[in-house]
Image 1 (tube, helix red, strand yellow):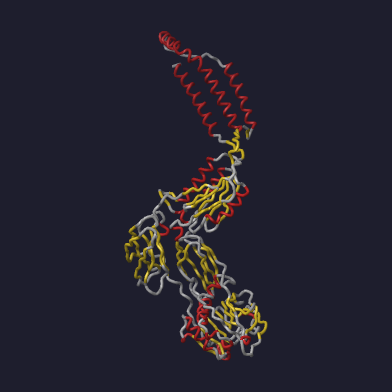
Image 2 (tube, helix red, strand yellow):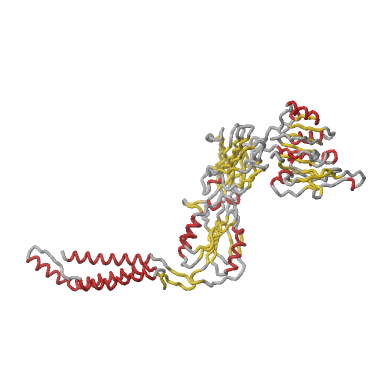
Length: 631
């Protein structure tokens, strides 16, 4: 045994002081009695109690000495060493959405937190505590904490997520801890079925009943389609459709159906939604252990900008471009204006040019680009216009010979980024032959077609921060206009050039949402379901990405210079894999388990407080006894 504060033992000096006080203390007491007769009766009574009366003083002294000794030890704070009883304790805590499932007023996550704190309380001093927190990302929440209260406070401050997560992502990290210390005590706390080795698995699930609903995005069929599922038993589920007229209006019930569900198998339902609405609410009205996956809100798809197009060209292949734009959808022939370069210059000079959202320059490079619009440059690169954001270098000379060497064969890229995937969506990638193309540098553009290292089709922001598409060749100098890919590319490029703010309005928590920065955009603010506002950086960006970390309705407010602000809503759902608590598997730590524990210690002072309280209470009881006896 050792002491944190050895000087506290100086309090033992009080023991001889107590003995001295006891020795010099007067043993006589002054009493007032009513009469001699009463005195004689009292004397006879006291004689019977004399043996006990003689001991009360000694007992009181002993109790007081013990109380002083206990108080001195309490101040000195004794530490009792317990050999081979302390170790490094590691916790792997599942913080995924399924841990929000609750029963009896407590969630699975809260049960796991309580279990961790119970293990910490029951461990001896000298142990250290580390927690690996698994959500959509895996992080070390805290490491090597030796103070129990601090460790428990850290556990209490953790928040469960609404995304998906698998404890397998923590195994590489945990394996490194176990390799460095094979005697480490490791606990895995989750609600998913895991088979473990060299650690202890604590299952916090209790077979709670849960249902979930899944809805398809709205389409032109005027129908709401989806499915429901029961994960723990067969069930009869009531599915309700409701709608509202505006963002702040209450929902009005339209229809309700009963769906017979077999355990673990999705059952489909369908509603007709031929009505004017701001949003539709589809929900399961049956109560279960997780209400967040019982409701889906369906919002109308955000509409793209109006599409008026001006094509400036004196090339014979203008017909290819015009038909491709019409075929891409969203633009009628009446909304396309065809101009020669001379007509375009005259219209600009006299202010008669029709306002358009997309300007296509085919084989012509304007001295000044129109602003706050989308631009297509089709072989319109000559290096005189610095607003394009690209640098012209030279032309690759045309090949006039016959045979395979008479043309260049460009290659499509393998899309990996969200923008590349958008530009390449559904492209079949037929082989293309190009006879002549311009060589240019576009460092901040996304390339989708190239010859060697030379970009042939790319998209990005020009110096005016407007969306711009660049073709390094004339359509007539290639066979692209005859390929079915041309219409698909035109559609993708139109959607890029004149995008809606959102590509879709229903997501899964954990998804990364792509928000398009539309022309004339001043600011975009995203408000999460919990009310947290995030202002996006739109300067110099044609799109922004936001990771969805909550379930419920997100609101996007877009402010533009040329129109009123636009408010767009989207819904983030609970991941289906979390609703079903699916996952788990075998989690094995390689290596031989060892049991080389370090010395722990016990320094809890509660026992000393109890001892002091008992001694003082006993001393007070003897004092009361003496006073009662003398009456």
